[in-house]
Length: 82
Ligand SMILES: [Zn+2]
Picture 1 (cartoon, helix red, strand yellow):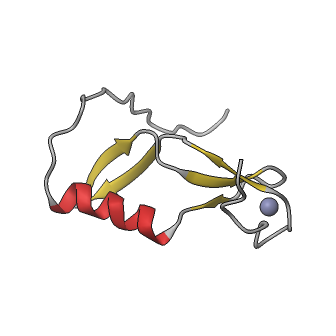
Picture 2: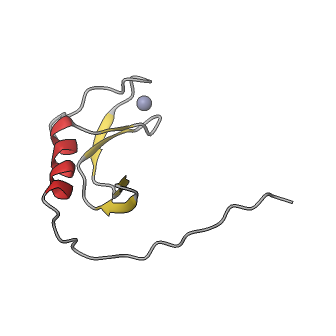
């Protein structure tokens, strides 16, 4: 595979492209986007998003696209460990 990302900014490790789902909040609501091309450092796990990919994500919201599906997200209330 062609090298599309520079080495990790933080640790110098190799950054490989992956397609993890990405969660983000938009106007107070939680959304998830699947198959987002993202660079992930193989050493420290830092994620790198290309500017054009970030722009593509913005466009999804700006165009108010219909989601492919709606998922339910379990929400936990944090409680102190006894
Ligand atoms: Zn790294």
